[in-house]
Length: 231
Image 1 (tube, rainbow, N blue to C red):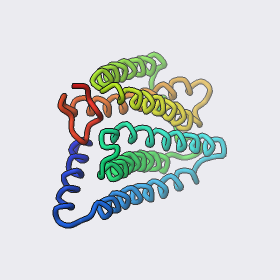
Image 2 (cartoon, rainbow, N blue to C red; image 1 turned 30 degrees about the vertical axis):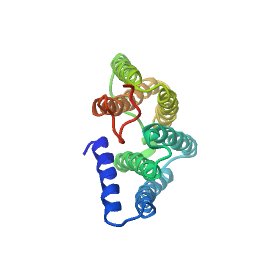
Image 3 (spheres, one colour; image 1 turned 45 degrees about the horizontal axis):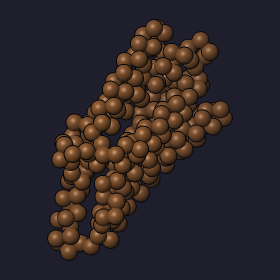
């Protein structure tokens, strides 16, 4: 199910719950439980992943984790700013945090699975099984896509929403750089530039996809699941 559809379903569920006698406090508690469940899942898998890292990689992973936390805060602030001051705002923020936290936990599960199939200090290591030119071209292509989607999206936003997206995007860039620094810890001096470009291209492509979904799913009229759009 698409992210917008999930949030719309949650908004509908909130209204249905209210109609069935559930208070907003109860609905907020349900959202809080969803966030806590996602956080518990992430804590478990990141603890397992951290245990497999040498000291230098642990330090880099910790920095990536802090950068991710900052990004989640900024991204959810942007995504839910339309409901600020409303009774469902806290619920939507909690569900936004739960969604992103669950995505991060899934990423770590994939990474942990890959690590378990590797031997020695080569994990984590972004793929470097390509030429330098190929990795560079892939990153340039992903950058062009992200820049275009970001530009198209910010043009559709209300004036007060633009700084929120800009802040979230800068926070994401810091996360991407910290994450790829961690993922390429075990790369040699010769292979690191290729591995770094490959990692950045992968994450940049994912971010472009996320923003493109937001751009496509938010119509000009907008709704509670979309950031504030210009009329």
